[in-house]
Amino acid sequence: MERSRNNILGRIDWLTVLMYLLLVTFGLINIYSSAYNEAHPRLFDFSMRYGKQFYWILLTLVIATVILALHPRFYYFFAWPLYLLSLLLLVMVLVIGATIHGSTSWISVAGVHIQPSEFAKVATALVLARYLSEYNVTLEHFRDLVKASLIIIAPAALIMLQPDMGSAFVFIAFILVLYREGLRAEVLLIGFLFIVLFIITLIVDKTIVLGILLGLALLIHLLVEKKPLLTVKGAVILVATGGILWLGMTLLHKGISLYTVIFLSLLAGTVILLPFIYRLKLVRTAILYGVLILAMLFTFSVNYVFNNILEPHQRTRINIVLGIESDPYGSGYNVNQSKIAIGSGGFTGKGFLRGTQTKFNFVPEQSTDFIFCTVGEEWGFLGTFGVIAFYILFLMRILYLAERQRSAFSRVYGYSVFSLFSFHVLVNIGMTIGLFPVIGIPLPFFSYGGSSLWAFTILLFIFIRLDADRLEMTF
Image 1: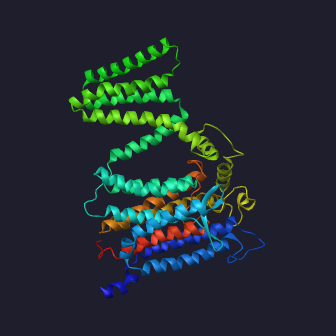
Image 2: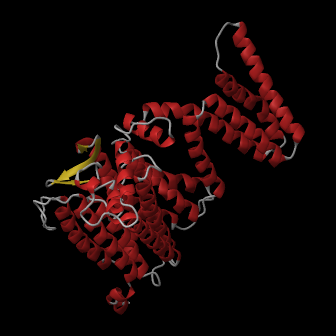
Image 3: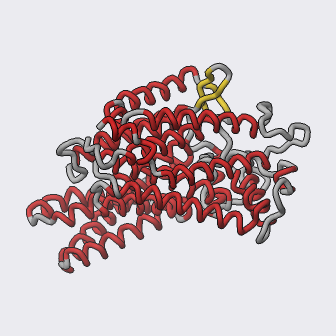
């Protein structure tokens, strides 16, 4: 066993380490280009962003070495303490945090701003792996699914209070982990449909949405139960209750919207149909009806959430992506300039340090959230294609490593690493080209920032350490 520990260097997946180093190096090159100042040309100038990033990279190499030196069981046994510590830091942010760009997401330590939400992703991945690897825990049990969901929701909720909606949305990536570990495909499908429903409700009048939902529910019921008479009876009851409600309110000279009529008739229909559903043991009908009621409530809450919880600039960004409004000189300025920068690069790009959009600061946050536009402008289509292709290879490598793990803990953690990296890459690149709303999340190993670089490095190298002992660790 001692010989095996001393041979750790021979068991490390050096291909993944090499891919990491290449990503970090190319990221530093693009940060240097995006923030270049002729008066401060030295890469090691700490007064410039590229100088700070260089020193942070050196520190990450120390962090990576420490991670590899620790025994894999350390991450298993200290998963819960690290998770609780991350929650404590997120609470501290709300009390003593520094506000930057409208979000109280940072803690200042010796003049250095640390973003706890970045490290909360690592802690959540560890504790989720610890919980799902415990004996007799299965996502087929509703209780276990709720506990796993709460592990994910707790840090996301605290991050939303900062408010940092972008970092909070990243935790959605853990759904892929739950699916790999036994979450029913139907649950995943329902979640996806609710996202689609949210978007449709913003675009289409909610009364029309409600009518479409009702029609789909009746059609699905007909196809699933294959009892046309029962479907017709249900439809008649709903129409009758709605008609009675509308007539009664009209006689009382009380105005009532069609949306309210449909919604209340469904609630009344529930009371009428429930005894029949129970007596005939129509389980699929009960599930379908429950999903329909939930969807109705969801559409009713969309406008409230959109108008009262999201910040004005977040609402504008979503509306711009959906084509509801246009604001090229306001909230849409970043994306508009980013697309101009990427498009101006052409096939081969303008060349290193020759990006005009970059040099004249047309793109805000060009070294952080919009670093990808620097790649597009200076390296062109070939550069962007190469970066995306390399990210895909990197993600596929992580997925391969996750699948070859023998312990459930290592496998779940590996899938968490894959899911988090995939979400960041997809959304960050998507928002720079206008496919997604701008939610302010970094591109792994490319975007400027110590917290994100350290967190991504810790996330990855813990997995590399677990993989190195995959043949011996069973947890």
